[in-house]
Image (cartoon, rainbow, N blue to C red; front, side):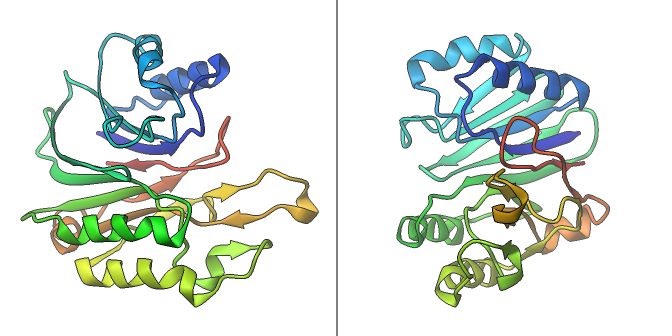
Length: 231
């Protein structure tokens, strides 16, 4: 089962829609969270259709008018139960119909300021569950001073809330391979800023059940973000 989280940074343009469709086919994706789609709700169904008729879609338009998070999955392969949605996350229970894989998964798209992310940390702390838990997505936040090169220096105030939340909910980073940084501003090399703001975390039950799963950070393609988590 292939699970992906990707900040596509806008899906209104046809070339990005084609790139997403190609990505889903080539990588045999079963489930994906498309983040920061910037597609208005009245236009979203037209974009969904271009991905093919075998995809089911849930979103958080009720809380985010520009469609910050779309969850897409193939019903023939995956069973999904949406448990909670906010402006910055969609929390669900996932079962692979072709294996014994089952887990709670929270897909995250964090807002851009420390103040606006406070409600995200509160929502994560309030989630109650028993079993494996995967949290993946674009948190728009770094965890250490080494998670950004160039650009503004990282200060403790920028990291503190994120660090405290991760400690409080008892999750750790999933092993990763691929790109060290998950985002860049794609400017000339001398002024290019890189940062690691897309993350994958698991709780103790996750690591007990799925120690071999790793997060794969792939090339960004048409986006400025790179991210892929797989099973």
